[in-house]
Amino acid sequence: MRMHDLVETNQTKMVLLVMDGLGGIPHPEHGGRTELEAAKTPNLDALAERSALGMHQMAVGITPGSGPAHMALFGYDPFQHVIGRGVLEALGLGIQLEKGDVALRGNFATLDAQGKVVDRRAGRIDTDEARGLLSRLHEAIPRVEDVEILWVPGKEHRFALVLRGPGLSEKVGDTDPQKTGVAPKEPGAQDPEAEKTARILSDVVRRAREVLSSHAHANGILLRGASQLPHLETLEDRWRVRAMGLATYPMYRGIAQLVGMVTPYVETFEEALEKLRQAWKDYDFFFLHYKDPDKKGEDGDFEGKVRAIEALDTMLPTILDLGPTVLMVTGDHATPSLYRAHSWHPVPVLLHGPFAGADGLSPFSEKTCLRGSLGRVATGVLMRLIMANAGRIRKYGA
Image 1 (cartoon, rainbow, N blue to C red):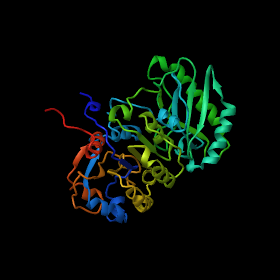
Image 2 (cartoon, rainbow, N blue to C red; image 1 turned 60 degrees about the horizontal axis):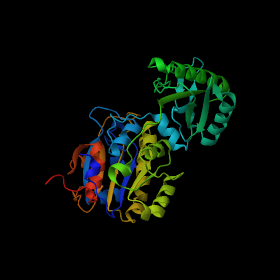
Image 3 (cartoon, rainbow, N blue to C red; image 1 turned 180 degrees about the horizontal axis):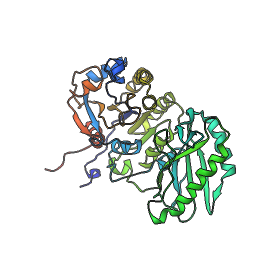
Image 4 (tube, rainbow, N blue to C red; image 1 turned 120 degrees about the vertical axis):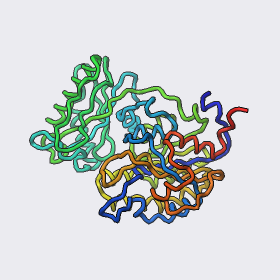
């Protein structure tokens, strides 16, 4: 039996609000609190008291990337549907990928005189400066052998690289070592059919470093997530919903597009909320993505992550005023500022709806959510809970 066979339609409205990197762990330098515990969140706290609370994680002990985490949030098995970061980034930037294209996520980076990575994000150079550098790279490296090279600007230090030509494969390794103090990796072939792709990428990285050598910060590039366009069942096919995804970062627009959501372009979260209001009557399901807690967590900025959570709290009434039938507030994964990266720790989740129940617990925090009625669940069941609480899953069996 497919889930589609149990799903029915109605006039309910559902919102999944994802605070990227929401989860944290106690920080010894901040009173043993997590960022969520330290934040002043009166709106979330009041909503928590009228909602069901719990914790979720993709898999015990597994640190999820953004792609797998969101696939799980949307109800797909992230271990069955493995999607590279490159495809998500390229789609989110509006690239119409063709069959056989290989897309990669790129970062500008700072390398020292020995070629070791000093800063994986090149000081988070601004978007306009990055666009200028990508124009230079496009002029200098438009193709390698019989393969066209597409340099696609993203936000700040991020970009997408697309290889278009015959005989390409996604079976190549990342050049991004994911840490500083070491040299970038070689994009080795993981399959004999990928030797051409690895050779081309190695040439691209070498030539890019030559082009960028005079720049103070962005004097190298790091690549990861080589991938080709997969075929997926859409949310409409699976859940019978008209869905809209609202995200300011390309990667998250990309994954929303991949599962069949309409993804209008928005620059800020405030613009996303305005688009939500405008489109409210036309869609059943809305995915809202808020990036800032994850950024601050990765920077090791405890206070910055606290401020990001507090800023979201001030905007929560805009969503509540629309009167969603079901609202879920959670994160895709934990990004503790103490750890300075994604981690395997469980993530708080709040489920508000007419049949969700009210645990009477507050504030919205890790410790409180551990006591909630939802318990500790796998990320992959959350979409099912949203749909059930919206009255969209009928009884199974006699």
